[in-house]
Length: 514
Image (cartoon, rainbow, N blue to C red; front, side):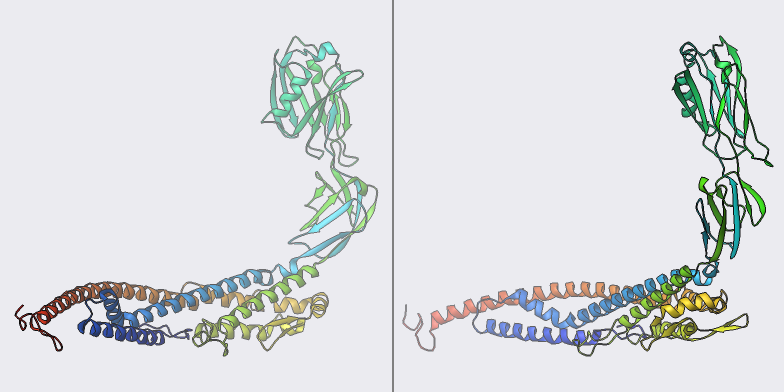
């Protein structure tokens, strides 16, 4: 029987073997009595029962030992899998505490209406005055009115429709020369440069309305008409937009190419504002390039107002990340305690957890405990978990004083930075240790490999024992079948001789000359 060091199995294979052997011997004795009975008057033997009892007496102990050893191996492999999963979950939760993101989270708060903001990696704490002059707009143009006669057949030619630097080509033929046909072709084109087309039926006739889907002064709409034939108003779809001067309102202007003039219902323009007195602009109302790591969202309500924008450390997220770490760490401690528990009131063989007394588990428990109970020095600051309101309990778990933690994160950021620095901080040390435990060639991997190897050996031995059992069964079945036949013949001969010569209390046929 092979063994794996460092663990106390719940039921030893030797104990299982002894119990199985005792049971087999008892069955063998019963079979022996049956055999004796058969030789002293019974006409036949229960061959199958006798063979089973004899074979079991020889292999029951080994079978029970191998079955128990395989069960113990599987139980410990499963327990190690549970431990590994718990460690992995903790390691995932550690990431924000050692990768530099813990104190890189910020909140962004605006004071009024029409301005919202969010902060991400790269943001810096600070307060800003924001004065919004105008918000970004997408251009919208409406053609002049076309009569029914015109709009039903505008003529043929080619349209080049542009929005900013993107454009599409549209061939107008006699099959698609109405305003509705042109609008439909623009909307369905795979090369649409970023605009929508609609036909509006006004009291004065039909109008083609073109609207850009992208804000910004550079995203103006231009329509060029070429290769005209049978012109019945198609030339009047030509329009040129010019980007407005950014030093003034920045609004776009237009010039119509035909006799039916276009009008601009909404000008293309950038958002314009000042940030602490510095002028800035953005083609989008989602402003991402003015403050590093900060996104500002502008709406019309912000125009003409001066608001304050405050970027501050997101202490709420920091507290949440730290409390999540404590919860994940406690889950690991709870898992290890369960796997190594001892219950004296449980039935014999079931008192110990699958990893009770396990050297691998003891190493992991000791290492993690030493890390969370120690101090960290970084950049001239020494900190412990207790300095943040986190204490180590007698059962190995951590407890959090939420008020003390929130206060420490708010008022002592240097303590937080030192305790969770990326070099030798608590989370960094835990992460390094867990990686060492669970990596290929680590103590968890080595232990699992040993158990797996032992299980394979047990399987090989079990297969060999099964073959041996089959051979024994065949041999004994043949022997006891022959014995059964012999005993039947002997009984028949005894009965014949008694009839011939007589028995103790009767005379036979020969004695009476019959």
